[in-house]
Each structure stands twice: as structure tokens, then as C-alpha cells.
Image 1 (cartoon, rainbow over the protein chains, first blue to last red):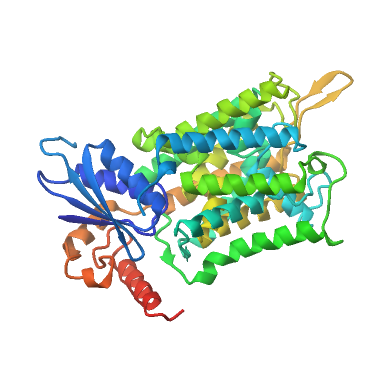
Image 2 (image 1 turned 60 degrees about the vertical axis):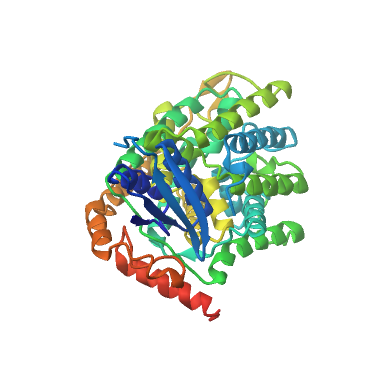
Length: 77
Length: 413
């Protein structure tokens, strides 16, 4: 699983970086995204869903952890 | 906490409808025409009331501005989203706030007012909106090429409270009206809704915007960045609602020239808002959004707002702001900025473009740092958020963040 830490970055950098990281995932690979604010959480959630991924959200101290799972057989390129 | 109703499409639309309706009603209650809400104009009026500039027609402690910040603060506290933070290129943000204000005052309005001007029939606002979109497009090019002001870090609670307390001070000045506060007797600064209506409207908008993440610049930016219509649907709802309320209230008058507190010098409307749009994009939010983030504890956003207030003072002290169109003996005299304002806009564009180039970082290097760090979050799970997996400004920042988080958890406050 890849990890992307976008905590502390201004809008829309978390989304830009998450989109790029999702597009670069190998087949079957998941992505963990660490965000700080609720705004970044929602923005990354929307971006990942629009790319056909399932997302689980977990509250963490100092932010949120998003587990992004691309749908099987779904081309993200 | 899971994303709630306001994170949904209907949530942001409801926020847009509420803001559009409240803004148009504030005009009915006494705010200047097509200026129910204008973050730039209202901060400029506050700068004048504090005596930072002496333009006699633009001095009034607008309660809407502290309302925005304190409404956002209340919502952030209620939903456990108040996060004191700061330290992401503060001086650059101050500068961006300053040039954003100069661009907005050359046009005569922030993005919110550009929408409200259009909703009131002021077609010259279209040129400002076109400039705004152009400026955002330039900013998005920089973002795509790796532009970043760097990461903010969690800060002690005091950092998050400074700007809301400053705004509380403005509310106290409004309540007690000490003699040193300036107050316009003519012009737009003299036109205002009743204080309690303005404050209540500000608090409501602040809370709604904090929950929905309403951002006029973000609405356009997200279209470019991700073809994401979410924020745009809120802005469209604001425009349509303000238009409908204006028509019902008899506040709609279509035309390009001699519109209220506006000029039809189209080139400088376009260029002024190009500067504002670029500066907002490079700083990560429109002026309203910066106030809402300041209410959530973002000290950098507070500094952006202080940059705007400072530049408003410069803008009037140095004659940079656009002059409204005038009607002299039945003939329209086109207003706009004088030469100093034109120079300031061009200087601002040069500075913003230079920052755009200077603040780029290579994502490839960031990704290499990620690879070197491996996927070590499992090993560090016990310490909260995974650290040492930093992507972006490098693992040094991630380590520093971990230290700050640990210190805060250790009860060193």
C-alpha cells in the first residue's frame, strides 16, 4: 500500500497530489492518504470517488486517514 | 466525524441560496447597491474606520466581516474542526492578500461582489468575472507545475485564537463606538443595514460557509483542476438567488455604464480581477474563504486577511482604487483606476507570477522521498498519524509535525 501525506498543504494541493497518486497505482494496489482538515478530507473523497475508487475514512489524532481502493479492472489512467 | 449534509451537492447549493438571498436583503436593509456582501469593500471600510486610510466615503466598521469569522469559529468549534495551524509561507500570504485587495479595489469588488453586481444587472461585472477566471487559470497552471507555499504545522491554541479575538475587538468597537473611530457621512461607507442585521447575517453566512467550504475562487479552480462542479453549484445558486431577490425587491437594473459603485473601464476591470484571481489561487482561497479558514484557526489565512486590510489602506492613501463612473450634465464619465492604480496592478501581476515560478517544487523528488521512506505507517501506528512517510516538502516536515503532535498530546500546552 502506498501512503500519501498531504497534511498541512493548502487547497487544492491535496486533491492534485491524490489524483496523481491514484492514477499511478499499480493494479490491485491501495492508497492511504493522510489529510489534516475536514475540507481536504471531503475534497480528496470526492476526487477519489470520481475516479471510481471506494474510500474508507478513519479519524486520527491531528487529522484523518483515507483508505482509497481502486475498483477492480477499472483503468485509472 | 463523517462528511455531513453540507458536504453534499444540496448542502453547498443551500449555502449558495442562503448567501445570495441574505446579500440581496442586506441591500434592501441599507447596504450599498449591489454590495450586500463584499469582503474586499467591507475590509476596506474597516481599514478606513480604524483611520488606516482617510477616504471619507469608505469608513465604517462593517459587522459582516467579524460575523463571518466568528460564525465560522462557532461552527468549527461545534463540529470539532477548530485546528490552530500556521507557518506556511506567512509573509508570501500577506503579500498575496495585499495584491489581491489592490486588484479587487481597482475593479471595485471581490468575487462575491462581482457576482452580486451581475445579479443586480451590472453587466460591466462580466469583464471582472472574465478577469477572475483568467487569473485563476494562470494560478492553476502554476499549481499543476508544482507551485506550493509549503505545509502549515499544527500550532498552539493561541495562534488560532488571535484573528477571532481581533474580530471580537472589532465587534466591541462597533458596540461602544469610541470617538477615535471614523464614520462616513456620505458615499458607500455611510450606507449600511442595521448593525444587528449585518452581524446576524455575517454569523449565519460564516457558519454556513464553514460547513459547506463555500469558495468563489475554488468554484472556478476546481472546474479546471478536476472538472469538479461541487463548489461551482454553490456559486451558481448564489448568483441565481441574488438575481431573483433583486428582481422581486426592485433592485435589478441592467446596463454596462454608471452602475452603482462601479466603473465601465473594462480593460482595468479585467486586469484588476486577473490579479485578484491569481493571488487568491496562489493563496488557496477567495477572500471570504480566507476569513472562514481564519475562523477555523488558520493563522496564515488570518495573515492573508491582514494583508488585504493593510493594502486597502495603501490603496486609498496612494489613490490606487478605481473611481466609479460619474454622470456629469447627463453624460457618463467613465471611471477606473488612475495611473498609480494601473502601475500597482501591473506590479502585482509581476510579483504574483514571480512567486508562482519561485515557489514550485518537484513532485518527482517528493515521490522519490516517499519511496525512500517506504510504507512505514504500520510500524508507527502507535504514534497516531503515520510519520516519516512524507511526500511533498520532504520528510523533515513530517518529522517536525510528528514532534509537534507528540508535544501537544503530551500536555505541554
